[in-house]
Amino acid sequence: MIIGILAKNDTAKCIGAEELKLLLTGLDERSERELYTAAAETAKKAYGNRVFARGLIEFTNYCVNDCLYCGLRRSNRRVGRYRLTADEILERCAEGYSKGFRTFVLQGGDDRFYDDRDIINIIKSIKNKYPDCALTLSIGERGRDTYKSFFVAGADRYLLRHETADPGHYAALHPAGMRLESRMQALSDLKEIGFQTGAGFMVGSPYQTVDNIVGDLLFLRDFKPHMVGIGPFLPKSGTPFGVFPGGSVRLTLICVALTRLLIPNALIPATTALASADGEGRKMGILAGANVVMPNLTPPGQREKYAIYDNKAITGGESSENINRLAEELRSIGYELDFSRGDWKDRGAPPHTPLGASPHGLIFYE
Ligand code: SAH
Image 1: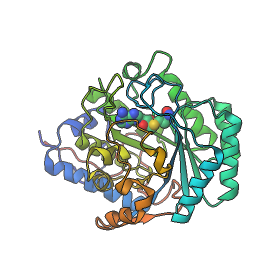
Image 2: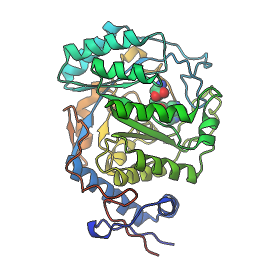
Image 3: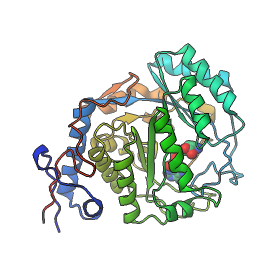
Image 4: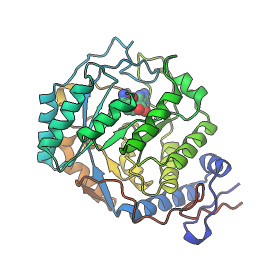
């Protein structure tokens, strides 16, 4: 079967599970290109030809969790662990600010060394010093009241990938104590509290089926997160999943494009995992509908210790030191690196269509 995709506004057809499955499995080369074009056009309608830059500060690689895919998992004894002090974090913000960044993302393992008070103090000092900057947290699951106190302290956004929307698959990726239900509860708490909220998943994680991916896309369609991180699974030696093959770059790009069509206004990064899996990954991600990049502001001495998977890109366009190269790379494909806060916006994209209907009018034909 050939599946054609035409980007037309007047012929919207519902994208449901069946259609998503066809798109994930049955695209020929031409249709795949059409899908990327439709996705990139949708992103441009919402945000223009701009790609937002976020300064990523990986401030701790300690983690209480034991996720089977992740190099930072508690039982991985081969990691040299590090933590940044509040002053060191602020120093990284100063460095980023001077380079032009107006969004900082604090990401780490689930590290309870920083209690709620510590995080609140860090949020407050960053927002006091840089009131013009957006602050994103990505520090895993904490309770609703804690999230609320982070929001009140000034944090603007929160990234918490759902990882997989299928409870059985979630159980295969995580240790017994972790439950999809808590993850989903945390996501809806974050959104309700008022955070610009990010979900997302890995493509090609062990035991993932096409139906799982369909489930992930349907979850995204219905939950409508403001941000969506999608990257290929990449094996990390020394973890239980270290021997599994990495996820497909092509399938990742298709998922990025479909997510763009399902949530036209989403802020979608061309992830580091995508850039790590393929030298052209970042550009391909943007051309498939992504519109965010997250250059690394972690202190260069610690960066290689934040090794969630093997062969992570930490130099080149991924590093904040090479921001001009990144800007040039984006310019070469017709995009401008944008240093503004880059908040989610509810305007500019095609009008919202009922749940399940494509804003872009995908036409399926045989
Ligand atoms: N502790 C935080 C941040 C985790 S790291 C949290 O729980 O949200 C950010 C993301 O990296 C994870 O959500 C996961 O989707 C991704 N990741 C972890 N290990 C990976 C691997 N081996 N390959 C690809 N992505 C991975």
